[in-house]
Image (tube, rainbow, N blue to C red; front, side, top):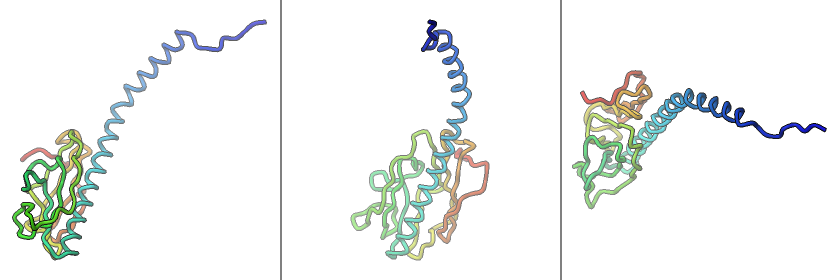
Length: 173
């Protein structure tokens, strides 16, 4: 009586491993691109929700609300990926004073990502209007000129909308 082999030969396993390695090397770049797109989408959505929350707090409680990156209690420019803070800013000095209230503080964004805003803070007045001029908040995953970059436009009425621009860059200038 003849028995059939129940396992794989070394040659068959080696061929399967080589094929698996080739498939993985072809698929890895597209997975990275997919991941960057997902990171940009979720990151910009988180920023949008923070801005909507800040505007709603300003309207609901009739106080000025500032959105920025706090460092030693003061708003700092160009460090948005370190986490965004929302606080009531009664005197409008962009400093978290004793009479101000911390409303929300986000976690740190992915260290490979770049977040840019053309000012050091976004301020909402008690009527929900954004103080100053229109601004654009940019989120670039991985590099400054990523094809997956997203942007939010904040108008003077305090409304936030997604930019339809396809060529968003976080480079200075």
